Image 1 (cartoon, helix red, strand yellow):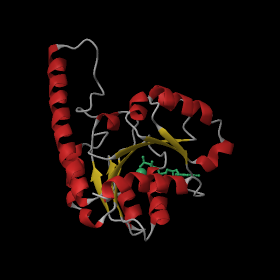
Image 2 (cartoon, helix red, strand yellow):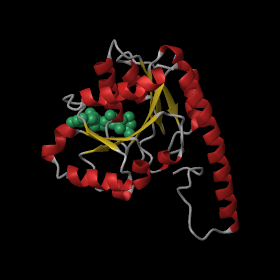
Image 3 (cartoon, protein in one colour):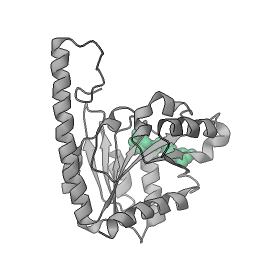
Length: 237
Ligand SMILES: Nc1nc2c(ncn2[C@@H]2O[C@H](COP(=O)(O)OP(=O)(O)OP(=O)(O)O)[C@@H](O)[C@H]2O)c(=O)[nH]1
Ligand SMILES: [Mg+2]
């Protein structure tokens, strides 16, 4: 839990707590200004930026490895990775030929627009079509920070239960798309897709929902075409 994301907010604030809240509001508005700078950089470079949010282990990095495979030769992908510790995920991507920069956030449970700006400096933005930002595994705090991405994608895996959109609504409200990941594991779980979709759509009626398996490739044609569809708005300048 980090100090800046408001994890510890309460209804009845003491004076020091109120000061902390004011500081948080200032941080958020500075973040929004930086997010706008990032967005302009992405637009100028003609790069579609996609922010991935999920709970830990829902399959973000595997999705990126497979997306690189499915788009290989057609779309040039780069990745900014966010984790509290280790550069394991960036290393996984670099090992399959994807330029990746790891941000280790230490105590912070989300990426912010400043961290993404730092990541941009380490990637060949002008040579990319798609920039993925793999946020820190957390369904709560990352949703509060605009990073300047064109597309916010939330992942919900079949192994974590269909109730998550109701329990963590903000991540689903902020998203443009929900990927139901690990679809190949559905027969081994009690995951109720119809219920998950209904809960998610109640929170966000515009949410586009896709079922994907990075293991089998199911759903990847739809996932890749939705990236291309959104990308075409950015790529034509
Ligand atoms: N069967 C199956 N396993 C998957 C799938 N996607 C991910 N996994 C497995 O789930 C585990 C976590 O996957 P990651 O891609 O590392 O998850 P992540 O969201 O990047 O995790 P963090 O970065 O730690 O938050 C790994 O053991 C993956 O092999 C899938 O589609 N099917
Ligand atoms: Mg990961």
